[in-house]
Length: 114
Length: 113
Image (cartoon, rainbow over all chains, first blue to last red; front, side, top):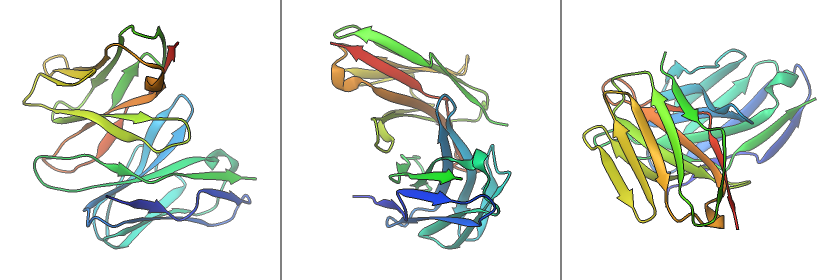
């Protein structure tokens, strides 16, 4: 079974704090993603990484950065948390190659910024 | 940039009826179209996918159709059951330059017993 594990299920942080969300996958997948899920807005892509140290901005990268130093780990960083970053964050991973195959999701981290 | 639009945002059907969810995509180079189901409090999970060299795919009560010319694809669920109640997401991806996966905004399906 593919496993994508996010370090925390729930987090409460204060405005202005630097926040790290960690994601680890155990299937040697090249691609890793961070999404934000808000009611009515679906899954919005924050950042995407297709290889170690490689990253690409998604639709809503402002206020976020990412780090991928090892293939299995993809970190999302909120440089200075704000209340509008209160949301559910989902990590996913998928393999490269043809034919393209499914992405697997972590269990999600519900972040509340107060 | 790439965009995927999904309709309707909510859908309520009587048990046993059919449900149809529609998506359109903007990037003509997209060639992979998965559908995910997210039950309450759980992670999204793939239920069916279709690639651009196929026009239709079926798996028991669910089917997906793809119209590349119109850049449109749809999910069809027949004989709906209460356990089909969930949020459904369509997505699009391409494999020529990156494997970025872009999702639609989701459809909340309620199947009334």
